[in-house]
Length: 151
Length: 151
DNA sequence: TACATAGTATACTGATTAAGTCAGATATAT
DNA sequence: ATATATCTGACTTAATCAGTATACTATGTA
Image 1 (cartoon, each protein chain N blue to C red):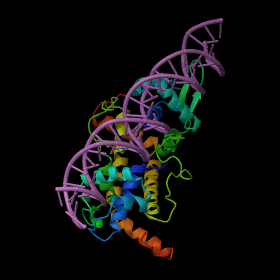
Image 2: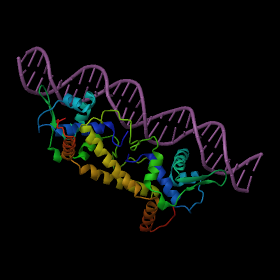
Image 3: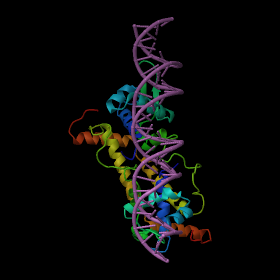
Image 4: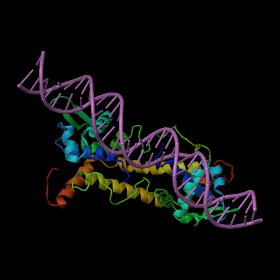
């Protein structure tokens, strides 16, 4: 439906959710799933990816859960995107797996070059927005609606 | 492999190819296909979409072919993208087909709102680059390589 | 009028990805 | 030990991507 895929959207929701919790306090995946309406087992996959990228920390066993590995102002949206898109789409590789000969010095070059400009300006935008920014927007929204549940 | 899909890349190559031909002179689809290394029948599909969007004009019968419907400086990349992405991906719709409840006033809202900001800045970039710009880059490239075939 | 040329339309196919689901293994606090 | 959690990997279903194939329609030229 949109520009992001659902996995990425879920990941961002989960990350922002964690960013709104008391810092470094473990939070169960099923709580996050419930608050953000994310399918439980699917969220587990996503959290695993976030953990692999060092965005999230996990504590196993009873009383365990997930927490952010850094403060929200030191995690940006680009980090989350890159964590999810290992092997997946959203301009996965920058190097070698060209199907056609866009290497020949022709129109294809120019098109590819333009594409890269778009990519890099997009990346810049993703990297300049932090989880803290998103949390702040959430708070502003709640304020403007004149009610303040922490959900 | 990249941010664009191959259909869009082909469409841009074809459009730029036409932009480099003598203005309003009909050009056969198979010639374009050959010059730009695009699978013939696949290009036909793409040209049909471009025609449907009023970007390209076609003349049927012997001696016919395709030409741009407007001058290259009045066709931008965004036009081509929108022509191709009818029903397809790359932020297809802006309205109603939300799978989950991103309508509830929660974190999902903020994520969706950020997503839309990204989309609109992307759209702005696509809309501010014309086919004429891309042709100019091609010419500059040829110059800098010190040889000037029109291909 | 007939033929060749060229675009138009539709349907089909194989490969890949998206979006989850499910079962079970592993770790840990009590 | 056991209940509670994460972790893992395989599996499923549907959609999309990237093209092919086939038949049809329109038009300029001989």
